[in-house]
Amino acid sequence: MIWRRWMGLWPLLAVVLVAGSCTTKTPTLNLLVWEGYADPSFVKAFEEQHYCKVSASYMGSSDELVAKLRGGSAGNYDIISPSSDVATSIASAGLAAPLDLSKIPGYTQLSAQLTSLPLVRMNGQVYGVPFMWGPDPLIYDTTVLVQPPDSWNVLWDPKYRKKISVWDDLSTVYMAAQVLGYDKPDSSRLYNLSDEQLEAVKKKLLELKPNIRKMWSTGGELTNLFQNHEVVAAMGWPLMTNQLRKINFPVGETIPKENTTGWIDHLMITAGSENKDLAYEFLKYMIEAQTQKKVTDVTGYTPANPQAAQFMTPAEVKSLHLDDVDSYQKRLYFWQNVPRRAKYNEIWNEVKAAQ
Image (cartoon, rainbow, N blue to C red; front, side):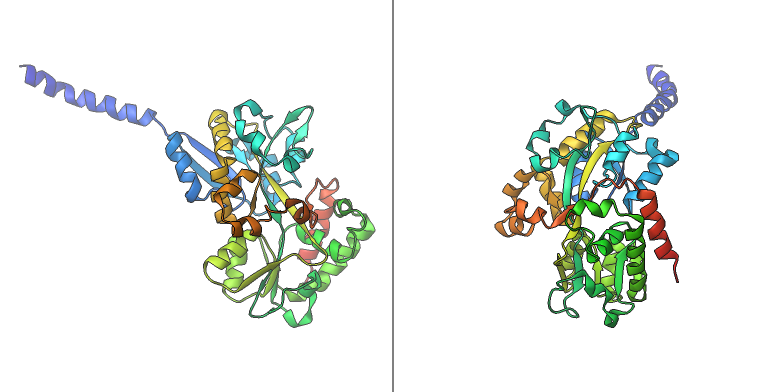
């Protein structure tokens, strides 16, 4: 009789177990970040530590990030990685949550050169943590350009017709403005160009179009363009240089005499995140020195936490300029907020639309 009663309870017990498993859902942290910032080599350990899943979407430009957030998608993401050109506007628009820095003890380890900037500070609150930084360098095929190009003007050389790529981003506008000398005597002028200067930039970029094979929008796209020998030079990121070196492609990277723009990527928690506790844990994890070293291995970017250097070889420290940060940063004009961003985008769109 007892055995029969237990057999009768099995169907009910099975229903209870199935129902229980359906309600026990693995928490998911949704990211909208730059390529390379959710690589399994460092994200997997976080997932295992916190019994969660990290789901990442990648953006191709700062404007794409802002458009998605303003278009009502802010609630779809928990963490974003805006660069220094839009971090301020995202914070001021209420799209990111102010941070309780007491929940991120590693914040004090971050470079004071980065945390002291006003980019993500307003009304006495901090809205983001510096994560990675780096340049927009000139990348080139060393079998074609045997000597490192010393000027961005190489992109305009007629012998490279249909062999050049530029980023589908305002950084290309900044680069052309540098070639025209509009960053003198103050580099911040790049982000405050007059209508007349913007027209001159447009003219300069239209002169470049015959050389452009394709405007890239993702890092992987530019890597493929080089790998397939469709292009020989481009403005890119250290990420692409890193990717090409790993497949033994003959790639070179340089900062021309005009210098270049650079960026500071921040990690922010969106205002609409429903997983803020888990998001704080992710920020803590991502700025730890060991994690920063792993991110650098993937991207080739310079870590915001200088203590990551203790896990690097002397050659790695030197290649990331952690041995002389001050001198290197003088060659980078870090992106700033662009008050007339809509006008800049209008000019850039006219360049792209021109035949």
